[in-house]
Length: 372
Image 1 (cartoon, rainbow, N blue to C red):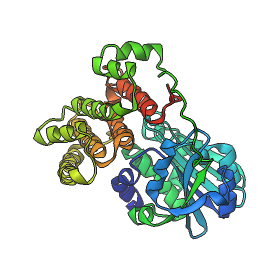
Image 2 (cartoon, rainbow, N blue to C red):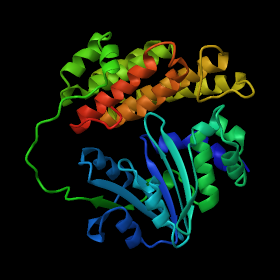
Image 3 (tube, rainbow, N blue to C red):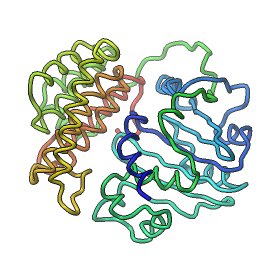
Image 4 (cartoon, rainbow, N blue to C red):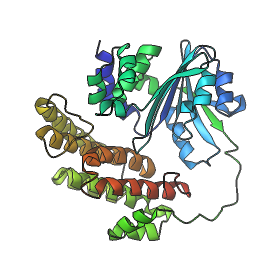
């Protein structure tokens, strides 16, 4: 009964290499879904998964959503706006039958919602269910779908996608991702607008105080031009690598490539070598993993924790090599948070990653993140 969980544990972060909101809708027609997403059918066209990344270049009232029909279900994927997880919309999408949604951010703010016949009957933080603060009522509900407390502890994201598959019967895999989909664009995204001056970068007072102790980051915050986005990406990866005490010629080569803003096909061979390194760390960590060990909260206090930190750090380096500036920053930062989360009270690394995320958002979008 664990095949789905094992699949998602291995594959889901490669399939979704950026934070997203995924919504499963049963029984509703496409036109109704489009309306709930704030669009119209004139905004629909055929496209591919990577078209979603256009959303990062859009205004707050605009967006892109992938819409994919699988039998009586429809999948909706969003990288911005996250309308599917909002309760009024989830309820509206479920009126004819049922709907569920899973959303997560770079900072691991996560939510899982389930609605039927226009009522949200289940809403919880899936990340929390893998921690000491798990909520028994939600664990019992998930257990109806043979997703256990241990599954949540091993990998909250794999557990959440497993629940979704067991409700919908839909496997989210590379075959699904690479097929053609409907792409909904919302807003007058093609109308040329007069360039507007950027607002000043906003950081909270304590963030400015922390940044002032790190000259390179302070320099970027003082001069936050879009051209410096790759610097933020490199700093993020370097911070993660240091936190995991990861080193060696292969890592040096990778950091050099990132520093030169090289990504994608030109560094595929380097990426593949790193993939072997990551797999080796994961295999070694699995051998010494202790019962009850929280793989999403690794620390240097255990052998398996040190190995998992190195595994996640290599994954962060790989993400930066695989994706261009902003997408690479987002993906590598998620792994960086996993490496540094256990140290968040003992050093600056975790807080610095959050600040780098806010600066990166500003550089990429020309506006301040709401989390700033």
